[in-house]
Image (cartoon, one colour):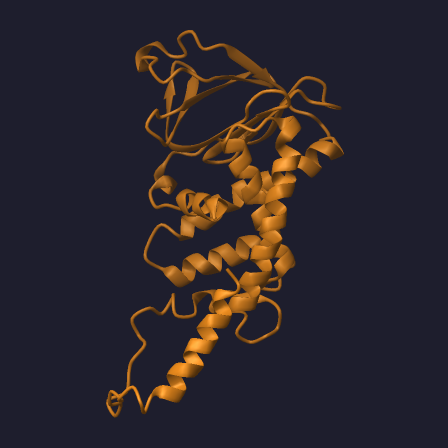
Length: 275
């Protein structure tokens, strides 16, 4: 449930109006030896994930971004409005994370500077640990671009498009489980899990995600093909308000409706076992 809440919060309207991180500095940055990095910094248009191997990680989603004294300053949501400062330093990238109480006109203040570099090749262990997480972090930005308005069907279609690895326009259990694993990565980084403990946190989330994927397909796969389409996700949601009744219908006494009510009770009782 926590992962689903995180996804809902990340898709909240209003984020898409922020100035984006320039494409030149997006992607993966590292500290230490490329064969075994000490830390990863991953930047998308509107987010940053910093994952040290031995210290707490951090996830920022930028609600505002501005230039100041050669720095690009991204401000995240939350009561403390966390900030991340970025600037180019030759082929490297420098960052600073000011304290919440630091004055805007004196940034970066006493915040220490961190220096990051690119790696020509990402080690397989790094790709295995972080690949799905950063992919889902980027996919959320594509989905939220379509989910900030009132077009529910368009929003769900965008979610399907981003999660559809096979390109067939439908979501399998494996594709839904991939989303769950990516969401588990995002939750773990947001909660400050270290890089060394991240694999365990993602594995725990993957087990719950696999079960959730199975139940989601079972409950929404109306045509029984084992996959979910955007139309199935939008059933009764994308067309809310157009479920017309029948003028010939008349309320029945409970005795007359008894067989139908008993059947409905049996169905609901069976569904309750899935909790």
